Length: 92
Image (cartoon, rainbow, N blue to C red; front, side):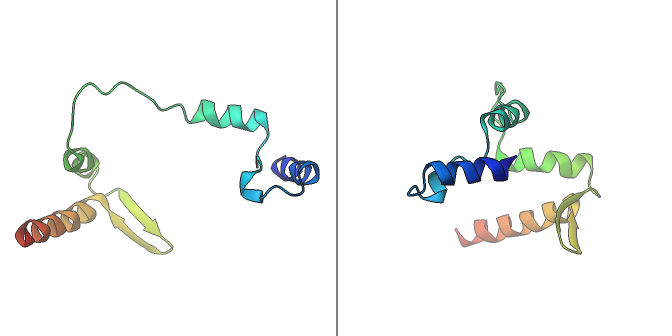
């Protein structure tokens, strides 16, 4: 469906740069908007480090980052982030 949309757009607007063409059709735009409607009211101000530590404390062994065969759990990542934070604080 997307290929057909792009092909049609290129055919209809041959001098328009690809970056300016719609790559998905209107129905796909609506589907994406419906799936990605994640707005919600923020009722309290939570510092980023506290927000990040929540999953690390709740599920410390869950995978936080995976790149190919390498992976790191939330607990490990939280410890590394804290080490970097302490280093930066010490540097002023």
